[in-house]
Length: 113
Image (cartoon, rainbow, N blue to C red; front, side, top):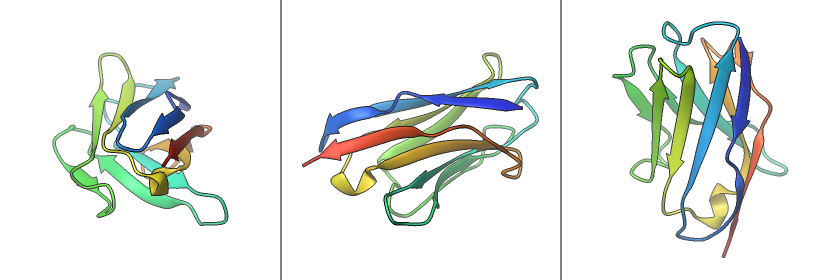
């Protein structure tokens, strides 16, 4: 599976962004998807995951209530809707598929205060 993340950018605190992860080479209908992020000087951290069925979702405490993960099997896409963004959300965001077997390149999210 090849993954292509997009949708990052510069946004003011309190704003919103929607990240997209386009999958190719294989259907994601039988794959769970996840988002991770890595801030400068920090280790990569888990943000959110969604089960292959799209029913079960897990969020890091730091984003719970602000971020929403989803997947569209028909379009072979996964998404991360990010609302009420904070400067501490600034990071490179990565999508993964399967049991983190597959990774896309990152997309930069910068939140200004």
